[in-house]
Length: 126
Image (spheres, rainbow, N blue to C red):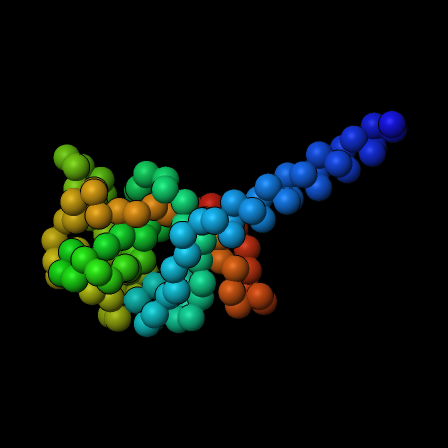
C-alpha cells in the first residue's frame, strides 16, 4: 500500500470518527440576540463536556430556571463559581443580573456550529 493511501485512510477514519462524535454530542439551539455578534439566533451548536475557561463560551443551566439552557461567555472562574456575560450586553441577562453561577450548572463548551450551513465551523477559539 502506498503511503498516500495510508494517509488518506487515516484522514477518512478521523473524519468519520469526528462525524460520529458530533452526532452523539449534546446539542443546543441559540435563542435571542444575547450572544451577537458571535452567535446568532437559530444557530445550532454541538457541546462537549469541557471545563469553563475565562473568555470561552459555555453552555449552562439557567440559575433562575434550571430546566432552561443558556449560552454565555465566561468572565471569571473562582471558588467553584463561574461569572458569565453575553457578548451583547444590552440584550443579555447574565451574572450582572443573577450573580455568579455554581460551576456544577455548566454543561460544557460549544465546539461546533452545525447550522446554518453557511456559518458551520469549529468554535474552539470562541
